[in-house]
Amino acid sequence: MKISVRAERIEPFYVMEVAKAASELAARVAHTDRPMIFLNIGEPDFTAPPLVQEAAARAIRDGATQYTHAVGLHSLRERISAWYSQRFGVQVPARRIVVTAGASAALQLACLALIDAGDEILMPDPSYPCNRHFVSAADGQAVLVPATAAERFQLSAEKVKEHWTAKTRGVLLASPSNPTGTSIHPDELRRIHSVVNQKGGVTLLDEIYLGLSYDATYGQTGLAIDDQVISINSFSKYFNMTGWRLGWMVVPDSLVAVVERLAQNLFICPSTVAQHAALACFEADSLAEYELRRAQFQARRDWFIPQLDAMGLSVPVVPDGAFYAWADCSRLFDALGVKDSWDFAFELMKRAHVAITPGRDFGSAQTQHFVRFSTANSMAQLQEAAHRLKAVLG
Image (cartoon, rainbow, N blue to C red; front, side, top):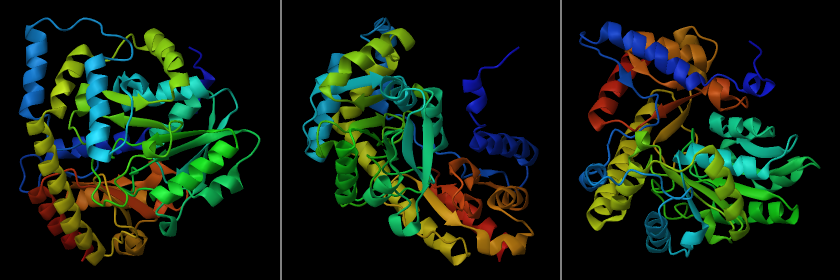
Protein backbone atom coordinates (compact mmCIF):
# COMPACT_ATOMS: atom_id res chain seq x y z
CA MET A 1 0.00 0.00 0.00
CA LYS A 2 1.39 3.39 -0.97
CA ILE A 3 1.67 5.78 1.97
CA SER A 4 1.22 9.50 1.42
CA VAL A 5 4.24 11.76 1.43
CA ARG A 6 2.44 13.80 4.09
CA ALA A 7 2.21 10.83 6.43
CA GLU A 8 5.83 9.87 5.81
CA ARG A 9 6.94 13.35 6.87
CA ILE A 10 5.53 12.88 10.36
CA GLU A 11 8.21 11.58 12.69
CA PRO A 12 7.43 9.10 15.47
CA PHE A 13 6.36 10.63 18.77
CA TYR A 14 9.30 9.40 20.83
CA VAL A 15 7.64 10.37 24.10
CA MET A 16 5.19 7.57 23.44
CA GLU A 17 7.97 5.14 22.48
CA VAL A 18 9.58 5.80 25.86
CA ALA A 19 6.19 5.41 27.53
CA LYS A 20 5.72 1.99 25.92
CA ALA A 21 9.11 0.81 27.14
CA ALA A 22 8.38 2.18 30.62
CA SER A 23 5.02 0.39 30.73
CA GLU A 24 6.61 -2.91 29.73
CA LEU A 25 9.23 -2.60 32.47
CA ALA A 26 6.57 -1.40 34.91
CA ALA A 27 4.61 -4.62 34.39
CA ARG A 28 7.69 -6.65 35.31
CA VAL A 29 8.48 -4.69 38.48
CA ALA A 30 4.93 -3.93 39.60
CA HIS A 31 5.07 -6.31 42.56
CA THR A 32 8.58 -5.45 43.69
CA ASP A 33 9.60 -2.90 46.31
CA ARG A 34 10.44 -0.44 43.51
CA PRO A 35 7.49 -0.14 41.13
CA MET A 36 7.90 2.24 38.22
CA ILE A 37 7.50 5.96 38.87
CA PHE A 38 6.29 7.84 35.80
CA LEU A 39 7.73 11.34 35.42
CA ASN A 40 7.58 11.19 31.64
CA ILE A 41 4.01 12.11 30.68
CA GLY A 42 2.59 15.62 30.88
CA GLU A 43 -0.76 14.74 32.41
CA PRO A 44 -2.06 16.08 35.72
CA ASP A 45 -2.52 13.45 38.40
CA PHE A 46 -5.75 15.25 39.32
CA THR A 47 -9.00 14.42 37.55
CA ALA A 48 -11.96 16.67 36.85
CA PRO A 49 -13.41 18.06 40.09
CA PRO A 50 -16.81 16.92 41.43
CA LEU A 51 -19.02 19.57 39.82
CA VAL A 52 -17.56 18.78 36.40
CA GLN A 53 -18.12 15.06 36.83
CA GLU A 54 -21.67 15.69 38.02
CA ALA A 55 -22.39 17.93 35.03
CA ALA A 56 -21.24 15.19 32.64
CA ALA A 57 -23.45 12.60 34.33
CA ARG A 58 -26.38 15.01 34.25
CA ALA A 59 -25.91 15.68 30.52
CA ILE A 60 -25.99 11.95 29.80
CA ARG A 61 -28.97 11.38 32.07
CA ASP A 62 -30.91 14.25 30.51
CA GLY A 63 -30.09 13.24 26.95
CA ALA A 64 -28.02 16.35 26.23
CA THR A 65 -25.78 14.37 23.92
CA GLN A 66 -26.67 15.44 20.39
CA TYR A 67 -24.60 17.58 18.05
CA THR A 68 -23.87 21.17 19.02
CA HIS A 69 -22.85 23.97 16.69
CA ALA A 70 -19.44 23.33 15.11
CA VAL A 71 -17.99 26.22 17.11
CA GLY A 72 -19.39 24.91 20.38
CA LEU A 73 -22.13 25.71 22.87
CA HIS A 74 -22.79 29.44 23.05
CA SER A 75 -23.08 29.16 26.83
CA LEU A 76 -19.59 27.64 27.04
CA ARG A 77 -18.12 30.30 24.80
CA GLU A 78 -19.67 32.90 27.10
CA ARG A 79 -18.16 31.21 30.17
CA ILE A 80 -14.71 31.18 28.57
CA SER A 81 -15.10 34.85 27.66
CA ALA A 82 -16.00 35.69 31.27
CA TRP A 83 -12.96 33.71 32.53
CA TYR A 84 -10.61 35.85 30.43
CA SER A 85 -12.18 38.95 31.93
CA GLN A 86 -12.12 37.73 35.53
CA ARG A 87 -8.73 36.03 35.50
CA PHE A 88 -6.70 38.21 33.15
CA GLY A 89 -8.68 41.44 32.83
CA VAL A 90 -8.90 40.96 29.05
CA GLN A 91 -12.11 41.39 27.07
CA VAL A 92 -12.48 38.52 24.58
CA PRO A 93 -15.91 38.46 22.91
CA ALA A 94 -17.59 35.05 22.85
CA ARG A 95 -18.10 35.39 19.09
CA ARG A 96 -14.31 35.06 18.60
CA ILE A 97 -14.06 31.85 20.66
CA VAL A 98 -14.27 28.51 18.86
CA VAL A 99 -14.61 25.39 21.03
CA THR A 100 -12.65 22.47 19.61
CA ALA A 101 -11.95 18.77 20.10
CA GLY A 102 -8.92 19.49 22.21
CA ALA A 103 -6.10 21.94 21.57
CA SER A 104 -4.87 19.52 18.90
CA ALA A 105 -7.98 20.15 16.81
CA ALA A 106 -7.58 23.88 17.34
CA LEU A 107 -4.00 23.78 16.08
CA GLN A 108 -5.02 21.69 13.09
CA LEU A 109 -7.82 24.09 12.22
CA ALA A 110 -5.53 27.10 12.57
CA CYS A 111 -2.85 25.55 10.37
CA LEU A 112 -5.31 24.46 7.70
CA ALA A 113 -6.90 27.91 7.67
CA LEU A 114 -3.66 29.85 7.38
CA ILE A 115 -0.88 27.74 5.85
CA ASP A 116 -0.41 26.93 2.19
CA ALA A 117 1.98 24.39 0.69
CA GLY A 118 5.56 25.59 1.11
CA ASP A 119 4.80 28.19 3.79
CA GLU A 120 7.28 28.29 6.66
CA ILE A 121 6.43 28.78 10.32
CA LEU A 122 9.11 29.83 12.80
CA MET A 123 9.22 27.94 16.10
CA PRO A 124 11.73 27.79 18.95
CA ASP A 125 14.05 24.82 19.39
CA PRO A 126 13.23 23.19 21.82
CA SER A 127 9.45 23.01 21.40
CA TYR A 128 6.57 20.54 21.55
CA PRO A 129 6.95 18.15 18.59
CA CYS A 130 3.29 17.78 17.69
CA ASN A 131 3.05 21.51 17.01
CA ARG A 132 5.53 21.29 14.17
CA HIS A 133 3.72 18.24 12.82
CA PHE A 134 0.47 20.21 12.59
CA VAL A 135 2.35 22.61 10.33
CA SER A 136 3.68 19.71 8.28
CA ALA A 137 0.23 18.13 7.98
CA ALA A 138 -0.94 21.38 6.38
CA ASP A 139 1.90 21.03 3.84
CA GLY A 140 3.89 23.76 5.54
CA GLN A 141 7.41 23.63 6.93
CA ALA A 142 8.30 24.23 10.57
CA VAL A 143 11.60 26.10 10.86
CA LEU A 144 13.14 25.45 14.26
CA VAL A 145 15.22 28.35 15.53
CA PRO A 146 17.70 27.49 18.31
CA ALA A 147 16.75 29.21 21.55
CA THR A 148 19.11 29.49 24.51
CA ALA A 149 18.68 29.52 28.26
CA ALA A 150 19.46 33.25 28.19
CA GLU A 151 16.37 33.61 25.98
CA ARG A 152 14.32 31.39 28.29
CA PHE A 153 14.31 28.84 25.43
CA GLN A 154 11.90 31.12 23.56
CA LEU A 155 12.06 33.09 20.33
CA SER A 156 12.96 36.75 20.41
CA ALA A 157 11.91 39.55 18.09
CA GLU A 158 15.48 39.80 16.80
CA LYS A 159 15.59 36.12 15.91
CA VAL A 160 12.23 36.36 14.19
CA LYS A 161 13.61 39.20 12.06
CA GLU A 162 16.81 37.28 11.39
CA HIS A 163 15.08 34.09 10.22
CA TRP A 164 12.16 35.63 8.33
CA THR A 165 12.27 34.89 4.60
CA ALA A 166 9.96 35.27 1.62
CA LYS A 167 8.48 31.88 2.52
CA THR A 168 7.75 32.71 6.16
CA ARG A 169 4.04 32.81 7.03
CA GLY A 170 4.30 33.45 10.75
CA VAL A 171 5.34 32.11 14.14
CA LEU A 172 4.00 29.36 16.38
CA LEU A 173 4.96 30.00 19.99
CA ALA A 174 4.06 28.33 23.28
CA SER A 175 3.89 30.22 26.56
CA PRO A 176 4.35 28.49 28.97
CA SER A 177 6.26 25.99 26.90
CA ASN A 178 6.46 22.24 26.80
CA PRO A 179 9.19 21.00 27.48
CA THR A 180 10.72 23.92 29.41
CA GLY A 181 7.85 25.38 31.41
CA THR A 182 9.13 28.85 30.51
CA SER A 183 7.07 31.74 29.18
CA ILE A 184 7.81 34.64 26.87
CA HIS A 185 8.06 37.97 28.65
CA PRO A 186 4.96 40.02 27.70
CA ASP A 187 7.13 42.87 26.41
CA GLU A 188 9.09 40.50 24.17
CA LEU A 189 5.88 38.90 22.92
CA ARG A 190 4.62 42.34 21.93
CA ARG A 191 7.85 42.98 20.03
CA ILE A 192 7.57 39.62 18.26
CA HIS A 193 3.97 40.26 17.29
CA SER A 194 4.91 43.72 16.01
CA VAL A 195 7.56 42.20 13.75
CA VAL A 196 5.11 39.57 12.51
CA ASN A 197 2.48 42.22 11.80
CA GLN A 198 4.97 44.35 9.88
CA LYS A 199 5.77 41.32 7.74
CA GLY A 200 2.10 40.59 7.10
CA GLY A 201 2.29 37.28 9.00
CA VAL A 202 0.34 35.50 11.71
CA THR A 203 1.10 34.98 15.40
CA LEU A 204 -0.10 31.60 16.67
CA LEU A 205 0.22 31.24 20.43
CA ASP A 206 -0.18 27.95 22.27
CA GLU A 207 -1.39 28.90 25.77
CA ILE A 208 -2.60 25.53 27.01
CA TYR A 209 -0.58 25.87 30.23
CA LEU A 210 -1.54 29.50 30.81
CA GLY A 211 -3.71 28.71 33.83
CA LEU A 212 -0.74 26.99 35.46
CA SER A 213 1.43 30.10 35.79
CA TYR A 214 3.28 30.82 39.03
CA ASP A 215 4.70 34.27 38.29
CA ALA A 216 2.46 37.27 37.72
CA THR A 217 5.03 38.76 35.34
CA TYR A 218 4.52 35.91 32.90
CA GLY A 219 1.00 34.74 33.76
CA GLN A 220 -0.67 36.95 31.16
CA THR A 221 -2.44 36.05 27.94
CA GLY A 222 -1.11 37.23 24.60
CA LEU A 223 -4.69 38.19 23.77
CA ALA A 224 -4.04 41.39 25.70
CA ILE A 225 -1.88 42.62 22.80
CA ASP A 226 -4.56 42.95 20.13
CA ASP A 227 -7.30 41.02 18.37
CA GLN A 228 -4.95 39.58 15.73
CA VAL A 229 -3.14 37.17 18.06
CA ILE A 230 -4.52 33.65 17.61
CA SER A 231 -4.53 31.83 20.93
CA ILE A 232 -4.91 28.08 21.43
CA ASN A 233 -6.08 26.78 24.80
CA SER A 234 -7.31 23.59 26.40
CA PHE A 235 -9.34 22.08 29.20
CA SER A 236 -6.67 19.40 29.63
CA LYS A 237 -4.01 20.98 31.83
CA TYR A 238 -5.29 23.64 34.24
CA PHE A 239 -8.82 22.22 34.12
CA ASN A 240 -7.61 18.59 34.52
CA MET A 241 -9.72 17.15 31.67
CA THR A 242 -7.10 15.43 29.49
CA GLY A 243 -9.14 12.51 28.17
CA TRP A 244 -12.25 14.61 27.62
CA ARG A 245 -10.60 16.07 24.50
CA LEU A 246 -11.88 19.61 24.72
CA GLY A 247 -10.15 22.88 23.94
CA TRP A 248 -10.73 26.22 22.29
CA MET A 249 -9.15 28.86 20.13
CA VAL A 250 -9.55 32.63 19.98
CA VAL A 251 -9.33 34.04 16.48
CA PRO A 252 -9.86 37.41 14.77
CA ASP A 253 -13.41 38.12 13.67
CA SER A 254 -12.38 37.68 10.04
CA LEU A 255 -11.28 34.09 10.68
CA VAL A 256 -14.32 32.79 12.60
CA ALA A 257 -16.37 31.80 9.54
CA VAL A 258 -13.35 30.16 7.89
CA VAL A 259 -12.56 28.06 10.96
CA GLU A 260 -16.24 27.22 11.41
CA ARG A 261 -16.45 25.91 7.85
CA LEU A 262 -13.40 23.72 8.37
CA ALA A 263 -14.68 22.47 11.74
CA GLN A 264 -18.06 21.57 10.26
CA ASN A 265 -16.41 19.35 7.68
CA LEU A 266 -13.59 17.86 9.73
CA PHE A 267 -15.05 17.46 13.23
CA ILE A 268 -18.82 18.17 13.07
CA CYS A 269 -18.56 19.45 16.65
CA PRO A 270 -16.61 18.90 19.87
CA SER A 271 -17.88 16.29 22.35
CA THR A 272 -21.27 17.45 23.57
CA VAL A 273 -20.94 15.72 26.94
CA ALA A 274 -17.51 17.25 27.49
CA GLN A 275 -18.87 20.71 26.66
CA HIS A 276 -21.72 20.44 29.15
CA ALA A 277 -19.25 19.19 31.75
CA ALA A 278 -16.85 22.05 31.04
CA LEU A 279 -19.52 24.60 31.91
CA ALA A 280 -19.02 23.53 35.53
CA CYS A 281 -15.29 24.32 35.35
CA PHE A 282 -16.20 27.97 35.83
CA GLU A 283 -18.34 27.54 38.94
CA ALA A 284 -16.84 29.20 42.01
CA ASP A 285 -16.22 25.90 43.81
CA SER A 286 -14.45 24.42 40.78
CA LEU A 287 -12.26 27.49 40.27
CA ALA A 288 -11.33 27.43 43.97
CA GLU A 289 -10.32 23.77 43.62
CA TYR A 290 -8.24 24.53 40.53
CA GLU A 291 -6.37 27.24 42.40
CA LEU A 292 -5.61 24.84 45.26
CA ARG A 293 -4.26 22.36 42.73
CA ARG A 294 -2.19 25.07 41.02
CA ALA A 295 -0.60 25.79 44.40
CA GLN A 296 0.25 22.11 44.74
CA PHE A 297 1.89 22.07 41.32
CA GLN A 298 3.95 25.10 42.33
CA ALA A 299 4.97 23.45 45.61
CA ARG A 300 6.12 20.37 43.71
CA ARG A 301 8.20 22.53 41.38
CA ASP A 302 9.73 24.43 44.29
CA TRP A 303 10.78 21.21 46.02
CA PHE A 304 11.84 19.06 43.07
CA ILE A 305 14.00 21.37 40.97
CA PRO A 306 16.55 22.06 43.74
CA GLN A 307 16.80 18.28 44.16
CA LEU A 308 17.67 17.91 40.48
CA ASP A 309 20.23 20.72 40.60
CA ALA A 310 21.90 19.10 43.62
CA MET A 311 22.31 15.85 41.64
CA GLY A 312 24.01 17.55 38.72
CA LEU A 313 20.82 17.65 36.65
CA SER A 314 21.00 21.37 36.03
CA VAL A 315 17.76 23.22 35.26
CA PRO A 316 19.14 26.38 33.60
CA VAL A 317 15.84 28.29 33.67
CA VAL A 318 13.38 27.80 36.51
CA PRO A 319 9.99 27.17 34.89
CA ASP A 320 7.42 29.86 35.61
CA GLY A 321 4.50 27.65 34.57
CA ALA A 322 3.27 24.20 33.53
CA PHE A 323 4.73 21.15 35.32
CA TYR A 324 8.04 20.41 33.63
CA ALA A 325 11.73 20.64 34.39
CA TRP A 326 14.10 20.82 31.39
CA ALA A 327 17.33 19.48 32.84
CA ASP A 328 20.82 19.31 31.36
CA CYS A 329 22.11 15.80 32.08
CA SER A 330 25.32 15.95 30.00
CA ARG A 331 27.64 16.17 33.02
CA LEU A 332 26.40 12.76 34.13
CA PHE A 333 26.92 10.87 30.87
CA ASP A 334 30.29 9.43 31.90
CA ALA A 335 28.97 8.30 35.27
CA LEU A 336 26.31 6.20 33.55
CA GLY A 337 28.44 5.24 30.54
CA VAL A 338 26.09 6.86 28.00
CA LYS A 339 26.55 9.29 25.12
CA ASP A 340 23.28 11.20 24.98
CA SER A 341 20.04 11.93 26.84
CA TRP A 342 18.19 9.11 25.05
CA ASP A 343 20.49 6.45 26.54
CA PHE A 344 20.59 8.38 29.82
CA ALA A 345 16.80 8.18 30.15
CA PHE A 346 16.75 4.45 29.48
CA GLU A 347 19.54 3.83 31.98
CA LEU A 348 17.62 5.67 34.70
CA MET A 349 14.52 3.70 33.77
CA LYS A 350 16.39 0.42 34.19
CA ARG A 351 18.46 1.33 37.27
CA ALA A 352 16.09 3.56 39.24
CA HIS A 353 12.71 2.51 37.81
CA VAL A 354 12.00 6.18 37.08
CA ALA A 355 10.64 7.04 33.64
CA ILE A 356 11.60 10.42 32.16
CA THR A 357 11.58 11.87 28.65
CA PRO A 358 14.78 12.35 26.61
CA GLY A 359 15.15 15.54 24.59
CA ARG A 360 15.02 13.90 21.15
CA ASP A 361 11.38 14.80 20.49
CA PHE A 362 11.76 18.48 21.14
CA GLY A 363 14.23 19.59 18.47
CA SER A 364 17.92 19.33 17.69
CA ALA A 365 19.58 22.33 19.36
CA GLN A 366 21.48 20.58 22.17
CA THR A 367 18.41 18.49 22.96
CA GLN A 368 20.68 15.45 23.15
CA HIS A 369 21.95 17.00 26.40
CA PHE A 370 18.54 17.47 27.99
CA VAL A 371 15.79 15.41 29.58
CA ARG A 372 12.32 16.50 30.60
CA PHE A 373 10.90 15.67 34.01
CA SER A 374 7.17 16.00 34.56
CA THR A 375 6.19 17.10 38.05
CA ALA A 376 2.52 16.31 37.38
CA ASN A 377 2.73 13.63 40.04
CA SER A 378 2.22 13.50 43.78
CA MET A 379 4.79 14.94 46.16
CA ALA A 380 5.28 11.47 47.63
CA GLN A 381 6.13 10.07 44.19
CA LEU A 382 8.51 12.95 43.49
CA GLN A 383 10.26 12.41 46.81
CA GLU A 384 10.66 8.70 46.14
CA ALA A 385 11.92 9.43 42.63
CA ALA A 386 14.51 11.86 43.98
CA HIS A 387 15.66 9.25 46.50
CA ARG A 388 16.14 6.65 43.77
CA LEU A 389 17.87 9.05 41.41
CA LYS A 390 20.35 10.07 44.11
CA ALA A 391 21.14 6.43 44.76
CA VAL A 392 22.02 5.94 41.08
CA LEU A 393 23.70 9.26 40.34
CA GLY A 394 25.53 9.65 43.64
